[in-house]
Image 1: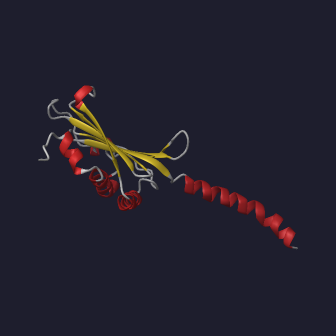
Image 2: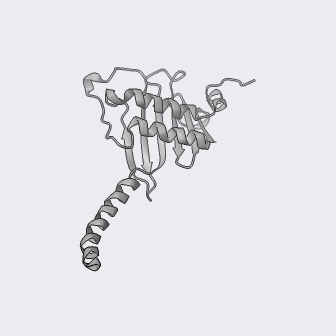
Image 3: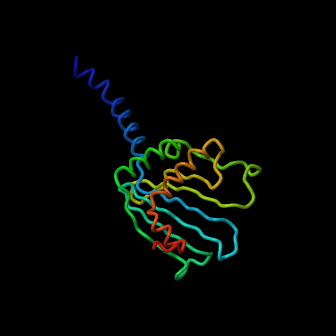
Length: 172
């Protein structure tokens, strides 16, 4: 009798296990990229930056002064997040809905004219990495508060001395 039950239950259990393991692995991320652009400003005032953080805590800030990404206008600085920072980053990702919801862009009539823009892209741990989440520059308004907290947290993960360096502030 046990063998008959095993034959009957085993296939559906295997299918369930396949889908459960697949849905869990689809939420695993390897790297996130947060991009900020100050908007349409004259070159001395314009800047943009990208913050890339891997799931093991390796981070990189790429900062561009003006519009030309060549030479001294571009600065790349590496940093590492500690365990507490990574735990908080994962918590902020969860709260924001980035990994669970398909966040859409606002309708055109709700997108502001001018000002800065920012967006987030999250990549999988598969090879080659795939985009598992993407947040547009002007997300649906119901996500804005949680996304702003996430973005502020990502920015705060970059050491202050790096921000001072790229902004030309002398730390003396």
